[in-house]
Length: 377
Image (cartoon, rainbow, N blue to C red):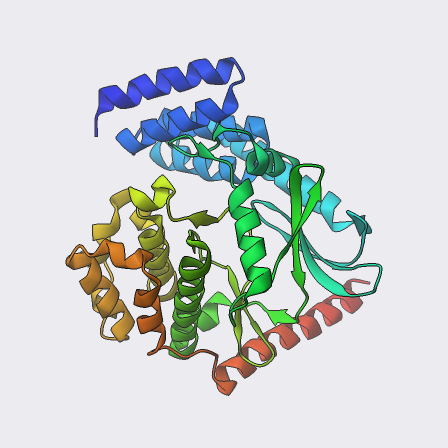
C-alpha cells in the first residue's frame, strides 16, 4: 500500500465529486482507502459522495469512520447528523404507505440499506414480502455498461438478480424462498417472495446459546452451497440476514445486490465470500471485534489476541475454517461441496428450547408494548 497512490486517488476522486460524477468519485475514494486505511479525508469524502447520491446508510458508516480517526472532524460530524436525520425522515414516510407498486400494504416490516420491506397482498389476496428499492438503489441496480459503486468498475447487478430469480423460482432450498422481480419498463424496482411468519433472533440469545450459533452457521453453509451450485453467486453480507419460522427452520431474507456473482473481483481478488463467513463467526462468537476483518484482513482470524483461535474449542466448524485459511486454501470457499461437507455436521433447524426462547422474547416484547401504550395513553 502506498500513501502517494492514496493521495492521487483522493485528488482524482475529489475532482470527479466536484463535477458530480459521483459513481467515479466513489470508486476513486475506495481505491484511496485500499491504499491507506488511515486516510481520514478519503472516508469523509466517500461519505459525502454517497450522501450526494442518496445512500445515507453508506454515508453514515464512512462519516463515523472519519470521526473515529479524527475526533475533531466537525464537517464529518455535521454530515453524520444530516445523514441520520435523512434516514429517520425517510423511514417515517415509508412506514405510512398504504399501497406500494399496486399491492396493498398490511404492515411495514422495516427499512434497510437497499429499500423498504412490507407485508403486502396482491389482487388475489395472496400475502407477499415485498422489498421496494430506494430510487438511488434502482439506479445502482440498473445502470448500463461498466461502472457502479465498487472499487473496480463492474457490470450492474441487474443480470445477477434476473439469474437469481429464475433459479430460485425453479429450485428452492430450505433456507431460501423463490423470489420474483417487479419491473417498471426495463428497470428492476423491487423483489417479492411468499410471506411466512418469521421471528428475528435477538443478539443476546445468539451470544449465550450454542445451538443458535451452530444453526446459523448451518443455514449460512446451506445457503452458500445452493447459490454456488445453482447460480454461481454467493452471500457477501450474512449479518442479520437470517430469521426463524415457527418450526425452527432458519430462512435467508436479504435478497438483492448483496448476493454477488463469483466472477466478480470481490470474490476473485478480495475474497468477500471468505470475509463474509469469517465476519459471521465474529458476529456469533466475538461480536465486539466483528468489523476488525475490514481493517486488518483475513489473517486476523488466526491472530492469538484478536482472532478466533480461542473459540475453536467451542465448535469444530471454527477450527476447520481457520485451518482452511491457514493452509491458504481459499478457493474452497467458492466450492459448494465444501459448504455441503460443513453443513453435514451442523443442525438444520433450532432446538425446541431455543425456538421457545425466541418466541417468548417476541411475545414478552408485545405484551410490554401493549402495557406501555396503555400507560402512555
